[in-house]
Length: 350
Ligand SMILES: Cc1cc2nc3c(=O)[nH]c(=O)nc-3n(C[C@H](O)[C@H](O)[C@H](O)COP(=O)(O)O)c2cc1C
Image (tube, rainbow, N blue to C red; front, top):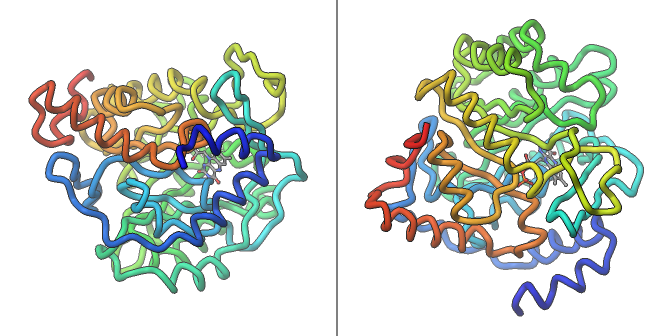
């Protein structure tokens, strides 16, 4: 059934309930065969071969229930999590809002998840050996209590120890606005301590480690983060998480507390990719996230310097097959420009 017919039914439900329903539906879906590589779209980043550059952003599949099915919808990779060492309930409901008029979402989930132990058991059941099957990233965070007690770094170290055997890459998420104190880890001193600790913990297989940052950064923050990533040998930078700013919005939910994502985040995230690209050149792969809902926007993000892109909020408005459409659209744009492989478009506007 076309998504435009299903959407009003989903939108009649509370947003979190609709989300849970979509996960339940995907769980019932058969797992598709291994993702096919397309010579135009295949790209190698941080030693990993991605069948196409369009990924599912973290937060949709927090507990790793369906990450291994997303390639069936056209995604080149899926990032599950954020997972914290211990299970935690997150903030009270309601904590997820659709801003229909703005094609946006506000969430203040606060890392609700079943904990890394339970996720390991689940993921191990479907995980193929690394490098085989769909590319799966695991996004790790710190528990609320540990962050409040100043023990956040230890939680990330635990995350690396516990999750790296199951991940093609790990994402250190220090940019969610819904855990008080978490974003403070983006400052140079705390960031040096954190990155030093997590990179030292990488196992013998040296799982690539990506860092995910907020879009709400001053120029000095951008410089500090870029320098810290290079100093510590981080493998890629994900730009960006949700914003705590509020560009002009029309929805009645505009003033809900939490992180804003979707269309109103687009320009801010693009601006941050440009900032990091300007500072880093080609020294560090970038992953562009924020407000992407069309092939044109995905292409522009890649041309601005991203090697890969991710999306989440646009799925709410455009339906589950958006990644497939974006990939088809990317190929048309590349043919128009005479680009043989997507890597050749990376950074051409920078
Ligand atoms: C409901 C919701 C939950 C999210 N949860 C997480 C999370 O747990 N960890 C994380 O790193 N990002 C999380 N994000 C941020 C997304 O991964 C992404 O960075 C952001 O939404 C911008 O992309 P978009 O505009 O395509 O949604 C969440 C986003 C949404 C909308």
